[in-house]
Image 1 (cartoon, protein in one colour):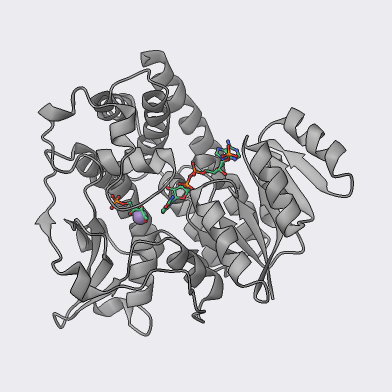
Image 2 (cartoon, protein in one colour):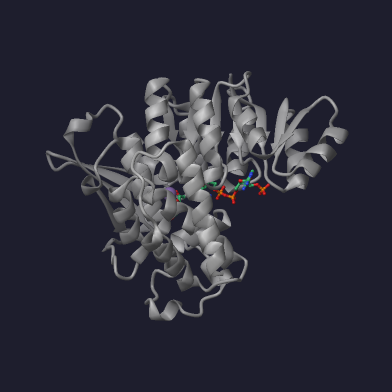
Length: 380
Ligand SMILES: NC(=O)C1=CN([C@@H]2O[C@H](COP(=O)(O)OP(=O)(O)OC[C@H]3O[C@@H](n4cnc5c(N)ncnc54)[C@H](OP(=O)(O)O)[C@@H]3O)[C@@H](O)[C@H]2O)C=CC1
Ligand SMILES: CC(=O)[C@@H](O)[C@H](O)COP(=O)(O)O
Ligand SMILES: [Mn+2]
């Protein structure tokens, strides 16, 4: 029985993780979890899974829960996230919180020797060098949950890194894949949230539409698989059936396929190296799928992908700025404060203004993150 801590239990990945636990009660249990502000859902999860520790974003919500569940340990804020991540009774952390707020809990969990299933890509983008160095030092395994990275991880089982020619990440193209940049001027939040293949949280759905999601995933792949950016490519694949591929020096390409269902990579990370049944997942029927389509990425049209490659290659605090500016700009778009195309513009302006610092430590990363968010807010 693996005892889990789950950050972001009320989110899209969090809920699907709970579904996986629910289907495998004899293999997994939930010892601790965090939520943000969705207290109704938090109460329900406490009732269904009987954890020992719960953390929420706000102090007043923590006080309410403490009064309702006197035997439960209840925490709040960033400290609560950290305590959930390092909870002594758990073997593994599932990090499905949104944004760079996941960085400190991840680093602390690594120091505490917890195995980590990582969905929270912003953490790897903002400080991949710190996370990977800590994982190496403490001999901690980071298991990818993001569908592309799980696919690559699966393709690499039994393979040697030295034989890899390149990674090929697939991108669906997002909500506006068939529109020109000109046609994006007046798009609404509702239209942007209409992803063609995946049902996900709001922020990542917008990232998918701007192609920043793929940019963040290129940086995530760089850190998880220790490969230079020149060996990481992106291809547009409309169906999201091939979740990603690895090409080897002998010209062989290994791909991982399946219907778009995040419970599959979540469960693989939890059960690795075993594979458990998942009866509720829809089976892939290639005869029904019929045709799979591929297109080259147009980096002029999807400017954020080009920016992410540049930021990743530049290193230092540049990826931190890319991520923080994007988090702030997407939140502003979702709040109706800026237009869709202004997301790109704000990220570009934050990057232009920034003077990079090389080999940043945690404090420098957090300071840069804060200053970048303030800069974007000053533009609103
Ligand atoms: N959704 C998907 O299919 C995929 C997601 N990912 C990655 O997984 C991560 C989570 O994505 P997703 O599940 O879509 O996001 P959601 O927005 O659906 O969920 C985010 C979760 O984080 C919590 N949260 C947000 N901000 C805070 C905060 N400041 N303090 C504490 N908790 C907070 C939310 O709480 P509450 O709702 O209670 O306020 C919620 O539980 C992201 O990094 C994303 O890129 C990667 C691949 C696929
Ligand atoms: C499910 C998942 O992993 C998402 O990150 C997904 O990749 C989004 O789809 P696109 O970014 O390819 O549109
Ligand atoms: Mn993905």
